[in-house]
Amino acid sequence: MRIVIGQGSCGIAAGAEKIRKALTEQSIGCDISITGCIGMCWLEPIVDIYDDDNALTRLVRVSENDAQAVAEYVETGDKSKVEKLIVTDEDSQFLSKQTRIALRNCGIINPELIEEYTEKGGYTALKKALGMTPEEVIEIIKTSGLAGRGGAGFPTWFKWNAARQSAGEEKYLICNADEGDPGAFMDRAVIESDPHNLIEGMLIGAYAIGAKHAVVYVRAEYPLAIKRLKNAIRQATENGVIGEDIFGSGFSCDFTIKAGAGAFVCGEETALIESLEGHRGMPRLKPPFPAQSGFWRKPSNINNVETFANVAWIINNGGEAFAAMGTEGSKGTKVFAVTGKVKRSGLVEIPMGKTLRDVIFDIGGGMKTDKPFKAVQMGGPSGGCIPASLIDTVIDYKALGATGAIMGSGGMVVMDESTCMVGMAKFFLDFTAKESCGKCIHCRIGTKRMLEMLERITKGEGREGDIELLEELCYSIKDGALCGLGQTAPNPVLTTIKYFRNEYEAHIKDKKCPAGECSDLIEYKIAADKCRGCTLCARNCPVGAIGGTVKQPHVIDTTKCIKCGKCYTVCKFGAVVKE
Image (cartoon, rainbow, N blue to C red; front, top):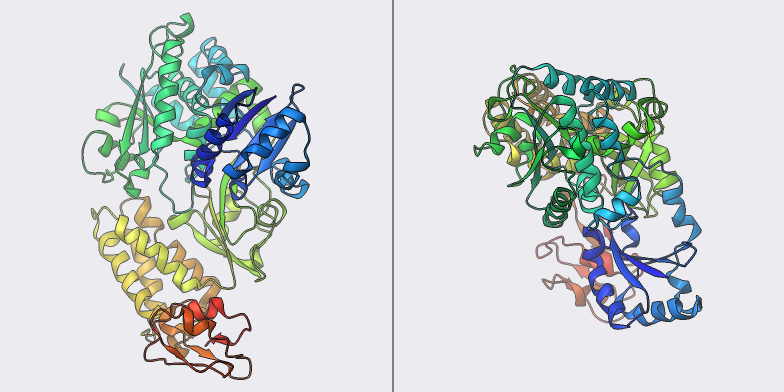
């Protein structure tokens, strides 16, 4: 038997390293290895046990206290002591209902060993590509219909071809791993779990455009991803995959990692290039485009992690196989980070053409609360909120764009009826206003003014005409901003006004938050007919705002109440109500 412990960032945060040490101390007579994130983040820590026939037993929510029971199962084969840890058939469907290409090795192989990647066919696509002409490689990518997975959905082959045709001997291939959307962790998981797949895709891209230099721009907040990528680059160099005359083909390419400082605007390709060159991350005017004048003013191509993670599979299986999945205008699969009020949060990879319902309810298991589904935020700060009435929207670039949202890099935040949509818009505007580089007035000042208005509205200080003024500001910013950050920053506001205008009106006219989330518009009261006088609320109130005697109805002093909601949470009889 062999034991494989999931050690992506989610697994380690849940205690996977403690489990590894505890199992090692049990002196089990089998190999104990690690892997990356399988995508079942709500079940971490995960321990996979393979028997001699390679049959898998998956244990979930394992703790270090379970180490002895796991050891006894490995030694005796008796599952009785680990029965409660074995993943259910229902949860197993999370993976069985997906189609994994970019994530095909994630949670399967040890990301720190090149041998496990090559055993899965790793670097065969690179060898195959090096036996073709660069133009033939680009033609396969064109046939596949692969579009940029960073959000814009621009045809990958077109960017590669533009860089290929640009004059000059010195060219650069750059990977944008500056994943900044709140709730998004697709790129991090790929680098942590399958770094050689990224390297192979980048090498194929570098060969196609004629670049001898490859750069990965990854945010410094991803230390584990950086560590494993550095290790993978070292191993690939030692094995002749990176460096001079790769596989005797005459093609040479070196790799560099740049740790970014975490500026969201550096997800925009020209701001990323500025940062790479040591300048403040601010977008450049286009044209010229990076394909003509990019890094150090040399022809450059930039794609994100997920885009490159598809390349090796496409070369090995053919462009037609990738194009056979998806819709007419959106080919292949797409990875989503599903978070929020959903039962099964984690990484999901599905063919384009599935619906939001398929992801949220069929794969994600539906709502983890007893409250109904309200909306899903797609595309992070650059995206928009899609309401429950559009749950059957097809997942492709055109259909999502028609709702006012965007595909984005793949963030998917699920909300129930307890979420205030005005507050959600304020959250994303707060993010984009802080992340604006300040280069253009529309973005620098406009997002700040919009945020101020949303803050007033959520405090009950909204005025007649605020909604119309917000809409006017939104369109002015979209038209005047220099880069994608400013041009898409109004999307969360526009979509929430479009689909949830009644909530804005309730905040402004009635000074009420229908979701009961805006603290300035909430008042906690105790219903005398339901209060048993158990004193639990009074004992938990941090400011002593609740008074009353044992077995008698209690009362909240609203002048002292800080609206923390602790009384509402601890009351067992439903006596504390929000108004």
